[in-house]
Length: 272
Image (cartoon, rainbow, N blue to C red):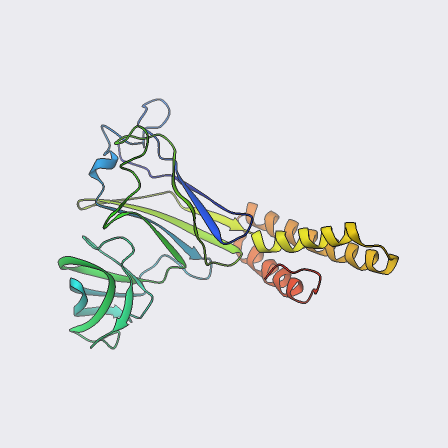
């Protein structure tokens, strides 16, 4: 028996805010044997937790790795193992606070033994393997002064609750893999492989075209807008169909074409 974290996400209609709902739920032997509480851990046992989003052209794989330490805001890559550390990478490893990112190079070239780097979260991490990951967005649920679980109804074995509401989202439309990671002492728990499709900007583009179509008076404008609305609907349907079939490459290819089309429309006004 082991904890199986569950999460769901949604974007606001303005495409710039994200809401994250924690859906692991309490342990129930007949319905949710991967939930919080005995014989699994409860939320009080969590040391760090975060939700990471990866573009489909990225993978939640190790970009760089080294045996190192963190003292305050300085990460030291004592013995470099592989890859290249760089600004913007998120660091992961035993005892590393969720959301720790490299913000500056000190004496590090990215691949030298003993190289030092500035990170955004002050902490103390003794010698361990530390990996650098390229992440589109990262939201901390527990780490430092943040703990969304502590006040959740039913804690330390809460039911479904809103972990983050209307947090800033800087990603574009696309297919994203969601990786929800919970560290409890030295044991790590992650969600099942999960993907989400965000089409907020394209849908806003189509909606703006529909509004203009409704308000149009002359037949030429009406015909032009009908063609544009139909094209956007075809694009959106194609993206959603490919995504539902698990064909993420095709979904992304159609999305790229749709975004290019959207950008050429003076009537779109979506910020695509």
